[in-house]
Figure (cartoon, one colour):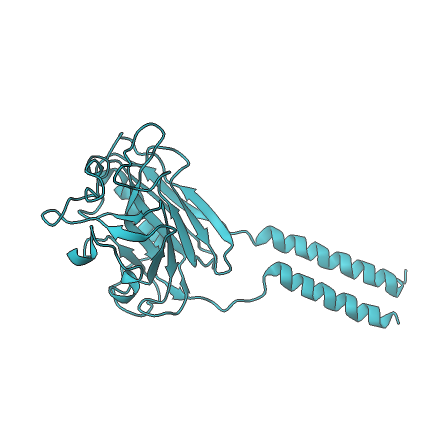
Length: 289
């Protein structure tokens, strides 16, 4: 059977649309998730944290500018100078400029803050509210991290010590005092701002001072350019005490794969397929003239 040119055009278009659906089916990112809810001891979540560390990459790289070929970075807050800790705010770029680890923070609130060391000021955000040291505990003593005026923190990644946008393949965080399920979470975004996945931090096994961990890794070339961390359902505050349905949560260690300069953007599969379809239709339509 000899097909007419109009029939060729129809089948070529159908073939390209079929290819589009195939690409749609294979383009979804597949996350590798790690999560655990523990008691008030680091040992209760340690094995999950260590498993995530191994997936994020070994070794733990030094806090210097530039990107290493592999490995990971960590922020445990404990080396932050007293002058940059509560009751003072932490500069958003401290862990890119002062201690290069490629992480820059932002928040819908007014600032971010690291808790004070004992003997300097009240620990575990007792500088904000004297009840908070009874709510929170540390995974790596003795500092914690929070947003001020919001319960949301975002982390954007850069080649450490530079303004070059970067991405990571894994990110996880330790949390303390997660009391409500499906509330504290991490959202993962690619360089185009698309949501890759989300993970909720599990509820701790003790009423107060519990530890939890949540993290996600990708192994198929996905790029995490930004994460958004939602801590509990309310911001810390002088008159904000945990009671009833209120869940106050803060963060300890951040663990993430080595920030690498982002791979140059290429057309997304849907855009590329549409371009190809247009070219095929254009070419065949010219032959029909």
